Image (cartoon, rainbow, N blue to C red; front, side):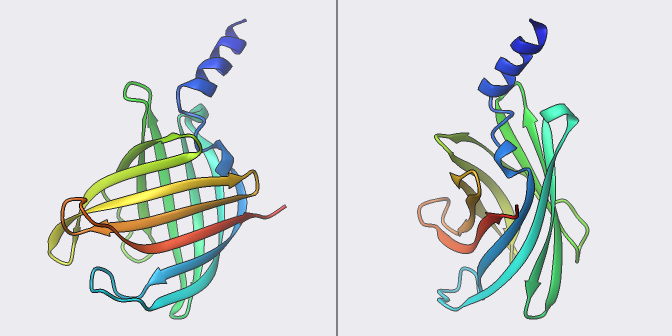
Amino acid sequence: MYAEAQSEIRTNDGRADFDFLFGEWHLSCRRLRARLKGSTSWEEFDGHFTARPLLGGLGNMDEGVFNRAAGPHIGLTVRLFDVTTKEWRIYWADGTRGVLDVPMIGSFANGRGEFYAQEPFEGKTIFSRFIWTVLSRDACRWEQAFSPDGGQTWETNWVNDFTRIK
């Protein structure tokens, strides 16, 4: 009975929101070459991504390799679920700085997750947004956008399309 109750809580409180991501993925990536400068030139590349649970389901992490023209770029994401607020905190670290960025905070509704933060960018503080869209069991999309005007307008600057590796 206890296990069933715990499973019910896990399913309904939001901590299972990222369970769709566990496993290995191929990424098709597009990254805007210049951000918040009116650029329409995109860099396209692929990547590989592996995600797994942490802390008995209260968190998860992934590691990825992006095969950019300048060479491989590696990164790590740690996601932690706050059982009080029912929100996720998403922390990113890349292989060039080795520092956890400011967490993106948000949640999922109807297969779509929205996460926001304020972060430094080129000497200014901007708003940033991640959108996760679950397309199917074997496909999802992540998008990043920046806003220089407090969220009135958004520039999408990075899109990753995920295809599960079976």
